[in-house]
Amino acid sequence: MDIFDVLTMTGGLCLFLFGMDVMGQALERRAGEGLRALLGRLTTNRLAGLLTGLGITALIQSSSAATVMVVGFVNSGLMTLKQAINVIMGANIGTTVTAWLLSLAGIDSGNLFIRLLKPSSFTPILALIGIVLYLFCKGSKKRDTGTILLGFATLMFGMETMSGAVSGLREVPEFQSLFLLFQNPLLGVLAGALLTAVIQSSSASVGILQALAVTGQVSYAAAIPIIMGQNIGTCVTAVISAVGTNKNAKRAALVHLSFNVIGSAVWLAVFWGVKIGLSPAFLEYPASLFGIAAAHTVFNVLCTLLLLPLSGWLERLVVGLLPDDSEPEVQAELDSRLMAAPSIALERCREVAADMARTAGAALKGGLSAVRDCSKELSSSVREKERKTDHYEDILGAYLVELSGMPLSQEDSAQAAKLLKVIGDLERIADHAVNLVESGEEMDRKDLRFTGAARKELEVLCAAVDEILDTALTSFLENDRDLAAKVEPLEQVIDRLKERLRTNHILRLQQGGCTMDAGFVWSDLLTDLERTADHCSNIAECVLDLEHHTVGLRQLRDSDEAFRQEFRVFAEKYTLG
Image (cartoon, rainbow, N blue to C red; front, side, top):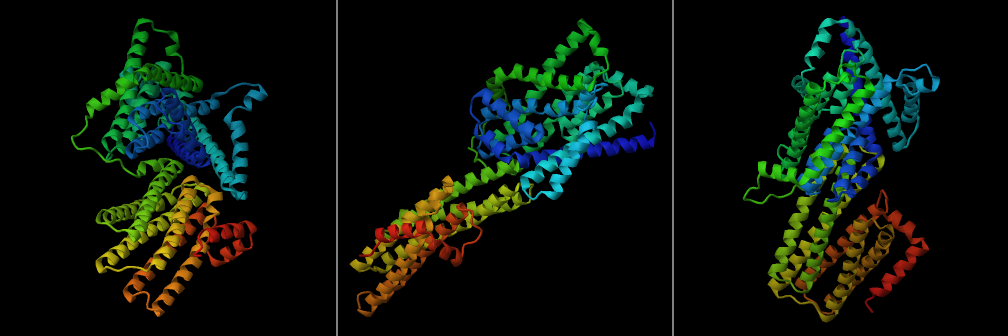
């Protein structure tokens, strides 16, 4: 093996790692809805959690990324430690899928149909289909499918390049001696752990082991301990990701490490005992690509079978190693670790935005109550909700901007943009709630009173604003397009009510029925209520997937009979008589 073989092997390794990364990112984008559905099925049921971890890892082709996501879930309060244990176990099995794909390169037969299963036969076709989809299709899903095929073709090409470059090592005595050294199980475990810790991917390190296996110098006695060590090395990513998290998230990372260390220790002892006591002949056979994939799967399944019934004990172990502090911890609302799967990070943003919507809605309702009867407790409550809404806008805005720079599907990118618009409107609704409180406080402080007619008119407008708020927020929380379509007709009714109330106020001023100071407060109230309705309309527009909110769009809706009917219903409901 000369310098050119080394360069070729290095190039093949780079292509292999690059292809795996590209394919994993594209799979995550393409399967975004699937990932969200899998997350939604999480329960305390062991089997459900196990299958969820297996499914997510099979989709994104990385147990490290899946485990980092789990740490983020626990840190955000989306998942309990008990659920995390089951998901982590499933992730360890899901990561074995890659090794089976790579093992196809080991097919060797003169039969035409069997040879067609060999990657060197079908990856050029996949690459051709992939480049056509990537270059000539406009839909994001088709382009992502093309990227998946191109990533897989690059991965397999890199694998074959590595295999070809190292094939000459079969004649090198020193290389054979190296793997004879790894037949010591402890050294094999150490080598596997170090390799995987460096490249932070057990799938990739198994692929490298499979590439080396083509030399015929890697026996099962050497390969099996290396595979065990790879499971320990892959924990490094999760352990690093747990830095700066809360106690339960650190426990989730410790569960991952404990699961792999305990499983490796137990089965290594069994393996060593079998090797010494029985000396099975197959251990000295050269490991094949299929054999390595099978050993990888069998080992992970055995670890799961061993520890799944003991998940409660594993939970108590990590809680004992990391006991609770005297001070209660606050769950993180948004966790950057979730960006390992951007579609799930976006789902978390929706959940936080829903909390923000409920908080803003409660603030506005408090503001409406303060207009009628303002108290110190009510004022304090509304201001606290407004501050909380500001906090939500700050963290969500920053998170969504960062998330927008991640590899998102076209649909998820549009959803992120919509959420950015919605949180701005929610924050302004809470601001108007505080303005209403300030108007109520001013009236109490100056002992101002509206006339009986003015109070009745204000009650009608407040009732209309209360309904448009409920309608808009419910349509957003439930993604109800039919409900969202009712918002704009009611918003136009509120616009007309505001103008009618403003006109009536001017008439009362002219007739001496209202003071100037009360008139200023009246004008502020009308402005805040009308603008609240505008923000509700903006939220409904986002639910309806409209890109702009303009007078032109309203005029367009005026020509729709359903819109006119809704307008007539609301106009009759909120009439001034």
